[in-house]
Length: 304
Image 1 (cartoon, rainbow, N blue to C red):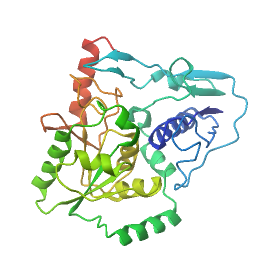
Image 2 (tube, one colour; image 1 turned 180 degrees about the vertical axis):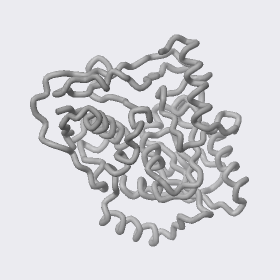
Image 3 (cartoon, one colour; image 1 turned 180 degrees about the horizontal axis):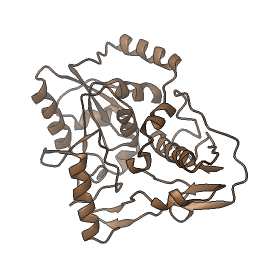
């Protein structure tokens, strides 16, 4: 049996869950995960409550630890964690618990490489419960939200990001992303899904309706959208990554280091083939270009 901890908030939980279960499936081990997270902002609540989540078997006989390798780096005006996928995870013994660096309770594990050949499995694990779908569809209708070809959903992360202002994407990122959407469709309308409407309004280039409800509703709206502009949040990453109907998903290049980076990503490999990335000049990049640039940077800086 293998297991891991759920730490941080929903997006982090989904990375930890997905990688743990993928490793178990690939290596042929039984698995189980405690649904009660630690070190979160919701007092241990199961934040995946709106999904049909299988938490596996009761956890027992754990004898070993796997510690994810983290790389810390003095970036441009910031100290960042540049953690690439750790291939040693595919060599772990049965009866192992996956931890972060040097026994940190929560692993990061934010790389699509872990899902190679298992993408459909991962999608099937995070199905939204039908009762919640009906509830959220009703709420969408009540609010007058139209998730059609003329509506772009902006996911803005506030909350604890207020205390780490260098992580919050500059106003120019939102302006450039909105302008790109308008270049594709001059009739495009915008709504903001956010945990912090007041903070979001401060960053938008013009007045845009902001909505915030429970975790599941906010996730569902992003997941149903045709056009998406993301913040550098794992919450939005998963809601968009699981969306198979989006025409275009824009995200900040260099992710949490969008404002500062000279080539590195925070976290190191969190780019996705499903997203298009916007740099500080408003130019667009696909994930393959981002990946190539990042790998060249890491080799030059001896970060591998």
